[in-house]
Length: 116
Length: 112
Image 1 (spheres, rainbow over the protein chains, first blue to last red):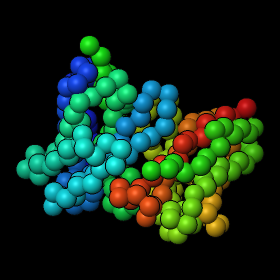
Image 2 (image 1 turned 60 degrees about the vertical axis):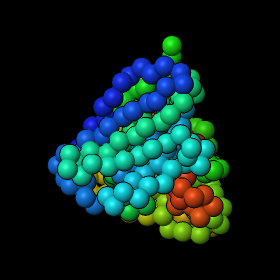
Image 3 (image 1 turned 135 degrees about the vertical axis):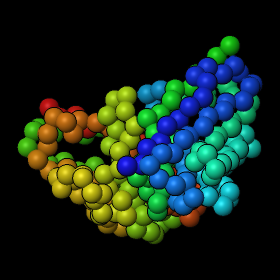
């Protein structure tokens, strides 16, 4: 059974960089697309971006200049960095797997609050 | 990127059937068979319940079904149960965004 687990600081100061890691267990990260999604409190889901095992990435145009997604196949992990955060970036951040144009496995999510 | 349009809320009584719509354009729902649906209970991660418009993943109840007509995809839940009360999100491939994917705004299902 594939499992994903997000990890990283739950509190980030404004203007700093949010950094999260997703650890994949029960399967290899060397296939599929790997996704980051977020959900502001009380709101809907928003795509952040994705990475393929080759290292090719794509991200939401509204966030693109601030988003960096990377992958470490040796550790079965992929990561998200979001720079210059503001309160609007406060959200539950999810990682997920995409075997096609859908998301079949999700992490439990981690709340990141942007506050001084 | 513009979100797909879903009703904010729907409701139904136990045993009834309900349908949640997801309306897009020719660049997403209407042009491709890549619509997926997710169920999200409060405080939990979303769960895939339908992909590629009509396909149900293994382990998902056959009370959930998906369809598409024109620019609108639909999720139907038959034999409503209390445990179906949740938020539901649709998603589609889109050719109008460099990201290639878009979510609907979500629908809150209340089981009366």
